[in-house]
Length: 88
Image: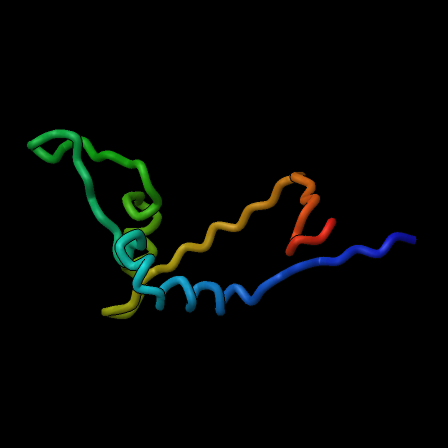
């Protein structure tokens, strides 16, 4: 039998810490946006999640002054060999 140490954190505490830190405020999006590639505004440009149709449709279902905070979770098979200055 092998024992494994699993590290985790409270996602809501992470979101609160991120959104309450003024250092990050200029990098966060609080509302969906339309960006266009032409002056006539007929061709939309999509290059980030806050420009997509999903955010617009989701935002429309929220109360006034509420916003969507998308959280993208991912995982891969990368093996961590050092964590907190200790061998994992």
